[in-house]
Image (cartoon, rainbow, N blue to C red; front, side, top):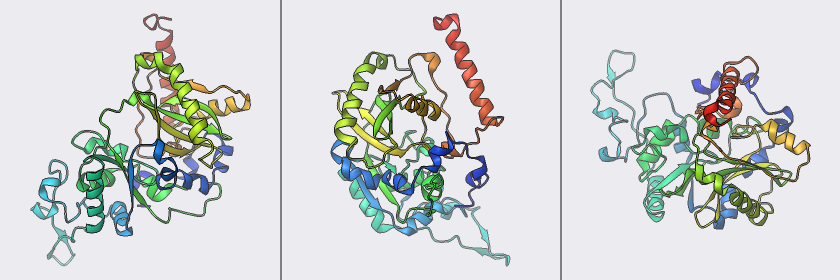
Length: 360
């Protein structure tokens, strides 16, 4: 997968970061702490129910293999093969591979992971029949479009395999997790894990928040879903901020060992806070309604307050920038295409904010 066209044309020279100090100070151990199999056991009581399976190397190689057409594992039946999206090459008359001698060769045997599939099937059943998957760090959010529901909801091994194999963003976990580490010695983790997280259809996206921690102090909170304006959230923002601050002090600050990091939470209707994820400070982590410069400026000002940002009007909605690479790999340097795009977006946002229709 090192030869993936999505990533190989992006070199370290194109990396745009918030500051050189942020990246150079990131360590492998900090990235490792953000793996779900590392943090979940400590936060199990305040997170959503999750079952984690170590992946055999053969399955990792299957995810990385882009040398031919997408073939589902051998045990997946025709009913599970999602025929509208993925075809069984054995049933396609035009699927022929030449061996160079003029004779038509048979397609290679599809992969088989019977032990893993059995464990996953049992886990899905124990979690209520539906889950959403993620690897050590990332979920295959960029491939949700290929599922029947348009979400990450999976009820079978075949749906999980389809999402994982269709995701470009998972290349980060498989090949590039340590690229931003100043003390990098690894190219990939020694082991990969598949986390099956219980699917909750009633979760409200406006109640997900990303929290920014520097020096073990909570310095910022951002609404996680920035592409939509939720009027009801404006009325709750002070209460939500207080709940998250209390939760951080009671449940996160003394348990998570890194000095600088981010973590995502969900606030339930009965005002309980649940940990969803941990990520490093900077690098491939999205700052959402902040910029890393703004967060670091707040630190330089030695403010004791926690900056809390939500989308407070329709004009403040951010466009959803969905890319197949980590945020930090985008070339947003001055004069680049992404730099001009973001500048134009900011100009349009300010124009709308100042317009009479916006109430200015």
